[in-house]
Length: 62
Image (cartoon, rainbow, N blue to C red; front, side, top):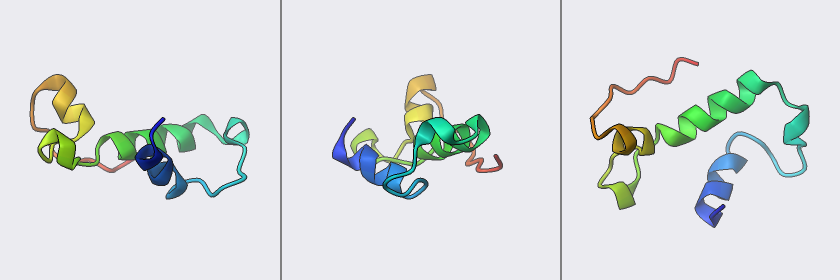
């Protein structure tokens, strides 16, 4: 995992939290929000958009 990804994870889970003790819904929500975030290296597409090769509406309702 890159340092950038670690920084993104810190927005949702502070240092010292055991992820294995968190509910799956909370983890899935963080993963979705991280993967829906546009990235400069992907020409401002999110990883999800890049994988399906299509622009998607921004959906953060999880």
